Length: 515
Image (cartoon, helix red, strand yellow):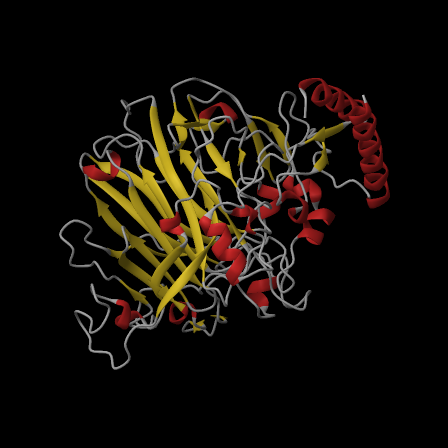
């Protein structure tokens, strides 16, 4: 299209109040796209980055019983003989982002995979997240923390407002209601910020069920991090003796208990000089009753495993932090040396819904949590919680560089500026278990989001915009949508109106071609 026709078409779009996107993104020549299309023709392959190398099209991963997956060859393991060899699965790529395009815009509604947050997060954070803290440089997603003082919107249960001035600024990206997946293997190549000497940074990569938008308190209230499907007192009563985290969508008021469970691929903190730790966690609700904890005699012996417990570097072990009044934390911790802060390392998450979660570093299995960790529990005075589940909900990815005293102590001389760099993120699924999308038939979310739109949208904060779209429309990067505005961003255009506008656009193009 000639420049003159392009500018005329854009003018037409602006007159009718629409943002027009040209069909420039084409990944059809990518080998991984072609492989996915051949193995699963009905799966939308637009989520695969056109720059993903052919070496990443598949992932060979042992997904059978834990002990048979240990060791370099998988069988027999170092500690226990298993009579069944491991079943290694050739998993196919369904999502990737190589972050090779420096011109991407992560502002609200501008990128079909991510949104950079403008937000003061809820964990006593000392750094506001702003769009300016997110960039792409040298083929890497870069989140930058600085000592620039700033304000940002803050989402609370009672409404949204502009925060007070905070001492630091940083960056975070979120894939909420854009790309979601249910199960599979996720790998993220990351270089941590700062060093292993000075605390202050809280880098994390985690998934969250799409019914909750991370950092948006009204959206997560009563759904984070529930994974429960029983009609009982703990699901419905606000002030039960050991918890006040009522399940908003529970088995009593719905045909199925729903929630926004979380899986932490990692959270990293430096506790003392040279003492950097990585935690791998499953926050879960509702809570087990008073007098119990998930490491006592009622906890199944093989419910949580540490494959690298005897590694001289990692020294993997249970996390002494048990949780709080909102969630139990079934969690492990692992030591990190200086190399994690100077070079890229690959962090992997194998999620089998209802069965297990396994964590990997550089393809080495380090930890497993399985469904035995979430069985029903009853204390001595007959208070109980029923079975909870390894997450079943469609989930999206969050990549945060926070600064807070909540996770690990902040050094007064924390080195700034500092960057968390992500080389790529890739997700594979078994070809017979492909399940992508934020509102699948068994666990729909879009109708609930539409009916509770105000819970997911920052509004009334001058100078800031936000975006709430429809996950079914965001996928392909060629779309017509309303310009994002505070309080009214991203609402789908009614079908008749869309037809009329499309007809107008087609007529305009026909007239242009005739010139």
